[in-house]
Image 1 (cartoon, rainbow, N blue to C red):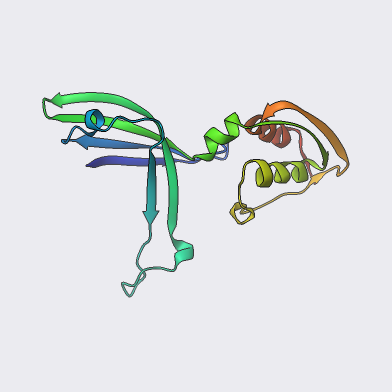
Image 2: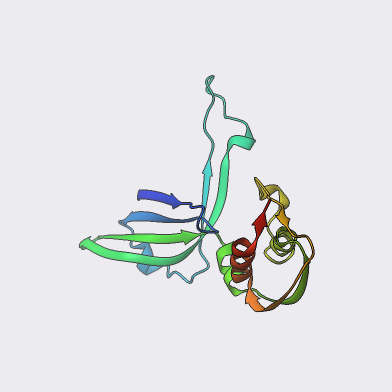
Length: 160
């Protein structure tokens, strides 16, 4: 049974993380070993005033990856409580994927290119995009991770 569920989103972090607190009477932690490939899917859709399901565009349907089991406790012999730490699956990819190439254009064009082509983020997921100046930069990415390049582009961009 899920006791607590929290999602953490910040303008200072690139990806959504969260925690799922579980009250386990079936000893799932022992019987089903976690391998690091488990996923948690969150699907939320409210009802409108008439009781009908709200339109799909107002629904939340996200998949998260379990990356850690923390705070394992046994309050009683047959009960175990623990917290599953979850994150956006792209977090792992962006921390692992390396870039070694020459980028040209404005920082926002470079960043958009990396996010679409390397991080496989869909264009529809960008709620807002800001153009940067100047538009004629050239930068050699020296074997950086996608995550490090995102930080570099954001910190060195000039907005107009």
